[in-house]
Image 1 (cartoon, rainbow, N blue to C red):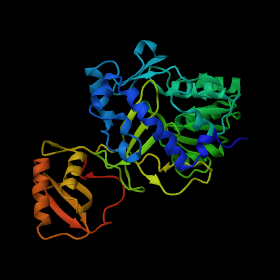
Image 2: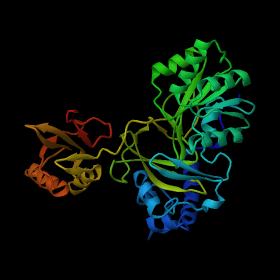
Image 3: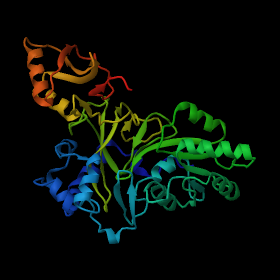
Image 4: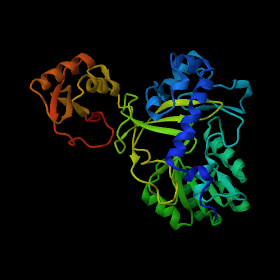
Amino acid sequence: MQDHYDILETRTHQDRDSDQFGSLPQFIARAMTASGWAAHLKGIDAKSVTSRAALAKLPVLRKSDLPALQKDNPPFGGFNVTPPAKARRLLMSPGPIFEPEGDVPDFAGVARAMFAVGIRAGDIVHNSFSYHLTPGAWMFDSACEALGCAVIPGGVGNTEQQIDAIAHFRASAYVGTPDFLKVLLDTAEKSGKDLSSLKRGLVSGAALPASLRDELRGRGVDVLQCYANAEAGVIAYETPAREGLIVNESVIVEIVRPGTGDPVTDGDVGEVVVTSFNPDYPMIRLATGDLSAIMPGASPCGRTNSRIRGWMGRADQTAKVKGMFVRPEQVADIGKRHPELTRLRLVIGRQDEQDVMVLHAECASPTQGLSDALTSTLQAVTKIRGEVKIISPGSLPNDGKVIADERPVG
């Protein structure tokens, strides 16, 4: 069996950068023909964006801002190059966020992840993602078509019917959430239905703890996972090596400090920012709101692209303190005003039935008066009084958290 989807997966880093950043200026210029991108990237010379450093200077587009932007400029905030009437499907994610499906094969870049699982032409794939308005099922459906697989459009619910379809058609592969796969197997076992034809699966949309993965493997279904969203498609995917998630060849991934667009050092946890080369619905520095980190080294599977550690939590750590919102970008602003600092964490707690906050700031060589200066900056930026603690570098955990709300719940 062929190990890799195509030669793109094994090209050198230099060739990958040359290909991607060589085509990025033209891609950005095309995106800027759409009103939303023209406004968002106003003043940007697309021809100048030929490297990671140049890309990092562009503003991020926050996924959390899309609902408001789409409301002001329907239906897609002006970020679509292809007009809605020429899209293949018009879809809707929770939020609500509206998404166009372009008329190109494997529009969400899922086929590469399915191939890594071992799904091949001629397989019968049972798709248990929702086909109702949301993009998920159609993303995987399009990949099945590109790979040459037949699809059982199971969708969600109707568990007994889905089991009957899998058993009758002898589906060999599953795509959907890992927990619903367990529901299918459990229900089939209780009713005496034979789902032994299922051998492999690509799962997403829910956590895949080691215990569940082991259980599914013990019941005959070997599953791998992928990390995706509706705007950029599959961002990264697991391979049989099971050492992190390989960044998809159709995107550029950056890890940035939460609340900013500033890249962090490889290995540090930060927010996932993705640029996808979708000709119909381009995404340029989309801040996903998810945390992850770049892993060192290369994957044993032979794929040469960068690896991320998978989903590690949410980057949006906004909290309300004394009736005021405190945001990650405010913590980042404090750091920019005091460049001698490294990591920062604002810890929010309760004392004497009052909200309190303490800024923990790492500094290798604190100067006299730094604590007082930081206290003033903290109040100036957040409009709330707080305490400051200067600590040595490496004291804070590398988990991407810049605001820790430790107030008791209830």
